Image (spheres, rainbow, N blue to C red):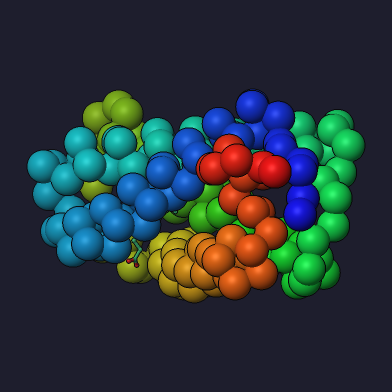
Length: 170
Ligand code: HEM
């Protein structure tokens, strides 16, 4: 039974990022991608871009914090978990970078935070294709991540969720 628990800062960042990514994936897929690029869309894009940029900063902070702290003790399936966690971080950072390049290249950054019109269609820009594909990969990775955590908690019964502040650790 692991009795390890991450530092409070790590736990808070983890759940903030989880909530923000859930918000970005749902609103990005079902609202942003469906709306025509009229001026009414600018408010939605502003929230999306700001939350996306904050997510990138939080993920980088968590990676730095994790490197400066003693490593968590290994669990069953450690190698797979490591690959999954590295992939999650990389894909989130790819989303942030492709989103920022898209915003710059398409003129959306100027339209959203300054003045000017949105492009007729974001799909004309390669970073938009990368952003859309990466969002689908992230949905799959998050699903595997959640299922793996539930497998540990309820099948292996090693109280793994306590590491992230959920439930008792002994
Ligand atoms: C880091 C986490 C991020 C996530 C999880 C995320 C997620 C998404 C999703 C799911 C979509 C819709 C994709 C589709 O269904 O094809 C989308 C679209 C978009 N995102 Fe992000 N995004 C992130 C960061 C950013 C950032 C930092 C920016 C810009 C600064 C950005 C700008 C955009 C733009 C301009 C669109 C296109 C909207 C459209 O097609 O009308 N995103 N994003």
